[in-house]
Length: 231
Ligand code: CDP
Image 1 (cartoon, rainbow, N blue to C red):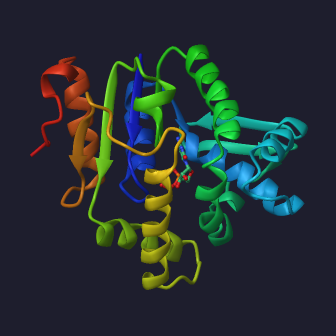
Image 2: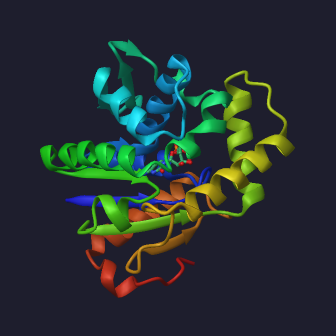
């Protein structure tokens, strides 16, 4: 079974995807972590972040490993080094959407993502283009969103808990810019798949959103829900 969860930054995709996967004993893949890993590597090597050809060469020349476990979620290794924390740095946040615009790079990563889905018995995959591009035939598609202020607040709390000193205003602007680049790019932009169930998570707790997602899956009736907003 394949479950696709898409949406903008801070909408709760990662936490919801991990918890839904844990309860269903499925694998979970955070595809954003893959774009982040390429961004980190490109920054380290000082290559032009908008040169798709170079980005593909870069990713082919290093060893990118993606692992998953229930406790830690998606783990990323670059040439054997665990970079799972490093890919969440403010510098990667600021540059990842530019890297993710490259069609050449996207095609390369999408192949890997589909391969991982095929190898699993059940997967929850989250990102920006899962329901619209990577897994178009997914059994269930969800689009999580929340108000920009709430999304910024959540991300600010997350970063502050890690000891990162970020200003709310700066973060708000960075998320808005990332949203815009993700929505306006040519290749597989961030948008709602026609059959996806949209959940505005602004007023809900993580547990409430997980329950809403699981209740749709338990009923096995995605199509009947259409684009109705879950109340
Ligand atoms: O965690 P957060 O929502 O901030 O972002 P993420 O899921 O780690 O994704 C980081 C960036 O990668 C996004 O802003 C997109 O530019 C890109 N991305 C993408 O283009 N397609 C995906 N399937 C996943 C992420």
